[in-house]
Image (cartoon, rainbow, N blue to C red):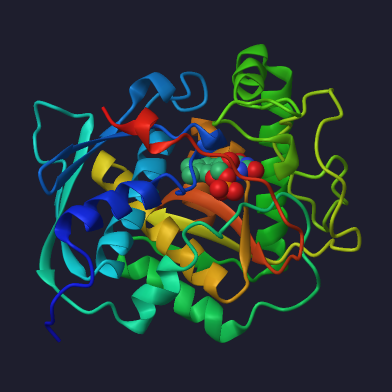
Length: 328
Ligand SMILES: Cc1cc2nc3c(=O)[nH]c(=O)nc-3n(C[C@H](O)[C@H](O)[C@H](O)COP(=O)(O)O)c2cc1C
């Protein structure tokens, strides 16, 4: 139904940039910049913020930017406009990932309002979940959400397959922990307690001593022997939750951007129903392990994210750079 938009196109553009800041990004690198020209927003990858060791190709950087793109689209919709998006519009400028502008005035429907309300509220979880079940109908709806953006979310139900994924995660984490280059990169993006930095993973975003889940999915070592981290808000929470892999049929830059949009749609949708996600993407940063996973568990599709979905009552910290720092 067309009707006058609730905010001006200029206000919609401002709201979109403000909202995009809250997208998830690998190690909270926030690898994006925005340029606003009239009523058009250009989303660019900030390659200075790419993880040179663990993400040399920029796959995780583009997934992060894809999440920011979905967030912008949702904010434009919430402001009362159909977003008009051109993805990778200029082959000569590969860092220019998308141009977004408010199009026709459209009343935001309930689904849009539901997702938009979660943009700032959603947080990454880094421990076990409570034993409260994630409703099967919600999981089915999340699969559809991912599909609508070009990704495939596959819940991994078979205990043997879950065990394989958990073991791969532990192996990848152990190898990375022994590799100085990987460790230094994680340390660079870990924020010490009390740090004023507006990027990186804050000590208030993970428990100091998370109780292991069964099977155990290894966490990133953001504290690196410092004993950083918050108190355990959910001490009895040791459930693995629903393990799921997000895949794409191809592995191009367009696929990565689509994976990011799928991811954020799934995360906002889950968050609207009180379900959080924990990520374990170490495996995907090691090409041989990623290839093994693709062949053995993903029917030949390319794994882009590994996550656990579940219910937690643990509050986490989140930091983001102010809009002024993001405008290129
Ligand atoms: C591509 C990608 C990979 C990620 N991998 C991990 C991971 O392996 N472990 C983890 O704890 N968080 C992971 N995250 C979550 C980020 O650390 C998180 O989004 C960021 O710190 C911002 O925090 P927030 O999601 O709570 O807003 C990943 C996020 C993205 C987009």
